[in-house]
Image (cartoon, rainbow, N blue to C red):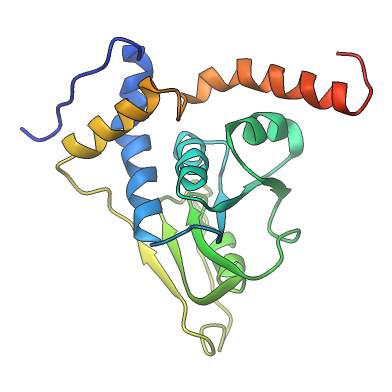
Amino acid sequence: MHELAIVPERVDPGHAVTLLVSGVSALRAVRRLGALTGRRLLITGATGAVGHFAIQLGRLAGAQVIAAVRDHGTRDRLLASGADEVVIGLGEVSAPVHGVIDSVGGPLPAQAFDLLAEDGLIQQVGARSGQPTTFAPYQMVGRRRAIEGFWAGDRFEPDLAYLLDLMAAGRITHPCSTSRTTRKYAAGRDRRDGRRS
């Protein structure tokens, strides 16, 4: 059995469960993108569990993280999670980005493909939209870029143990834990901007 790991005392077992699929998927997708230090990482569907962990793991890898969402209602939570920038859709994102972790599918992967730098890579970890992705004729001609299907694989034990250690050390958080951090972030922003909380 290669799917077991010891949950540290400082980690809520309910929070640890989300690491098994969402956390490991995010970790393996971030790793697949290669060296990210100083590079731009775009995460679509950033409000989901995979997106939440990908933001934090991308930040730990040294990336400049751009979180793409449908509306700004979750902006403070995503910034508190480690996103450098929160955008609505991809129209606000300037090229180039080094890597993309997409869990939405539909038109977004084709739009993100145009933003990729030379040797950039999209990890397609999901397709929540349920819509097909269509590429325009000759859209893939030009600089070398790639889009890959994603499979989390098996033998989660070492990655799960690594993520549990990060969570125990407070370096990554469960999506529900971020609400407290969000309130602190918003209060700090309001103080900086001269507003009362």
